[in-house]
Every structure is written in structure tokens, then in C-alpha cells.
Length: 430
Image (cartoon, rainbow, N blue to C red; front, side):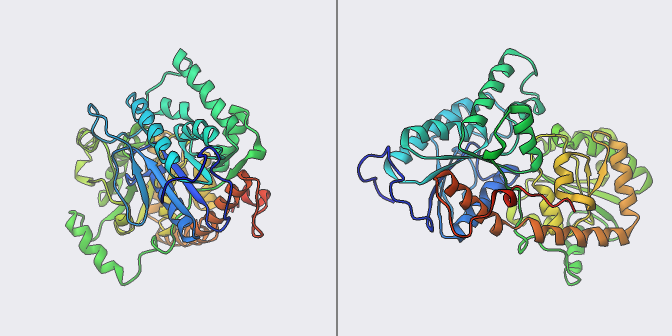
């Protein structure tokens, strides 16, 4: 990748639709083995398999991954560790991210900017206007609602109202928005007044060749791996993999384990994720369930399938009504029957094969898990149906084609295989 020829402000004069040059702006410590990081990673990999060139510009911290072109900002001396969720320090991180993006755009040519999250879209809009590049916004939840979920912002305050207006401006200004769910599209249209014609639904997907169900041959290895974690061979295991946080329902899940332990003492919770492991270990101790909860800490994404296979059922107690829920796809691809709080996104992914507890109610969550644990035939049936649903609807290779069609739409072009708008936004309710 060399220097640009001529005026860098006109970057997209000659576009090869079979080999697009994509600049992804990721305002996070990519890669960090959770949530939006997985979406960014899988999108980039799938686009590269189609022959396109992807460059990811991101924060200083994060884990490098093979075969991905990752560019990092300069460090901030007073803030060396990762940022998870909302933080006042992100203002400095995003300023450095903008400067790094300018540096890249001055020396290399791109056809389109793919801005992840609102901060990435904002940087993309400012610099896309300067360099003559269209911007596709990867919307994964409301900026202000996420801040409220993280208890970083107070609803109705002066800062909230200002940020809400900024969020709405971003939503209205980008050429095209990709949303991770139909619920997200509804939020953009109903709550922020966005134009539905400029929104394409691109659900989170999963690599179904990597996330595969447990085989008969794998049961012996599973028993050995469980033993290494101190889980008895005859135990039932509930798996959770994701961030540990209040808005993720971690507190409520541990409360639910009180009910489960009383009725199903041979049941263990394999709680995989970060941050706040020490805090939640103390919560488990206070609730009297520490002997039935196994904390693993951070699990590298490439090891996630093996760890998730240690479970008999999965749980996803996320409370947020605006964010995606990509972990559900991993559970589904593995054929793990899943209990989740009843949210629009959960119903969108799991359909009629999800098991839904009353949102925010730990006793309801425990009851649904106990009922599922006691019915192995239902476990098998649901697991099989979820796996098939994933194969039909949530394949990253098909999603990548839709992303490219979206880029070309933003560029005012189309391919012969371009997917019609109505198909891109369709969701199978089954």
C-alpha cells in the first residue's frame, strides 16, 4: 500500500467492484473477545474471503489477529488498560483515532468507510466529507441508551440531551445504516426518526463450521475438561460466555443460582467472561453459590467453541433493550438450548425455539433453567432446531455479500447478484 496519486480528496475515482478497499473505523480496543469485536472480526474475515481489502483502524490496546490489517492509535500515558463500555477517557481515545484515520487516508486510497458504533460513524462522516468517501454505519445499539445502561449518563440531564441530539444527527446523516436486528431498525425509525429506506438489517451471524455441536466422540474429552475445572462428571452445566456487568444480567444470574442450587444441587454455572471477576466472585460468595459457580475469566474467541461445549444448556440474561446479542448465535450454532430474558432481540434470533424468562426476574430465570435441565428430550429437540435455524439464516458468508451490496449502493453502484432491499431486511419469524 503506497502513497496516493494526485488529490487525496477524491479517493474513489476508479472503483473495482470485485476488490473494494474498505476502511473500518473501530472505536474500541479491538480485538477483545466479546460483542461488537466479534462482529467486526467476522465481517472483515468474510469480506476478505470475497477478495476485498479491509483495513481496521482502532485504539492502541487490543489483540492482533492473523491475516487482518489492523492499525492502532498512539497510546495515552494516563490510561494504559482496556476500555470496556462507557468512559470519559474515550474522548481522548476517539480524538487519537480520528488523527490516525486522517494519517491513513492521506497516504492510501479507499472506496468506502465502514464506521462501527456511533463514534466510528461520526469520525467517518467528518473525514468522509473531506476525502469524498461514502460512509456505511454499523449500528449496534443506541449511544445514549448504552451510556444509561452502563450508569454513565443520567436520562434527561443536560449532557444526555446534547448527546441525544448528536446521536440523532449521526443517524440521519450517514448514507446507509446496517443494523444487527430488526429491533434496532425499529428503534432508529420510531425513536430517532431515521429514514427506513436507508436502513438495512444485517443480523449478527456465526461461523457454523467452527461453532459445531458436541459429538459422541467429544463427550470423553468434555468430561476430562470438566474435571480440570472441578466439575463432577454427573453434574449439569449451565454455560454463559460474555461480558460480566449489571446490564448483562450477571447479578441476576447469580441470584438465580440461589434458587437452582436449592432445587438442583448438582447443577453448576460456568461463568466465562470479564471484567469484574473478583467483584462477582465476592457476590457469589455472599449469595452462597460460590461452590457452584466456576469463573474462568476472559476466554479467547478461538477457544470459545471448546469451552461452550462443556455446557448442557446456555443462558443469556442480558437486560439491554437496544443492543445486539451476538452470543446467542454462538449458542445456537453449537446446538445449546438457551434460556434468555424476554427481549425483542432475543426473540428475533431464537424465534419459537427460545425459552424466555420474565425480564429482570431472577426467579423466573431460575425456573425456566430448572424446567429445561429436567427435560433432556426437550434439550435435544431445541438444540437441533436452533442449529438448523442458524445454518439457514445466520451465515457470515451470505452476510458478506449483503455488506458488499450495501457498499455499492452507497457508492451509487450495483452488482448483478445484488440482493433486493426487501430481502435484506427480512426476518424469518420461525
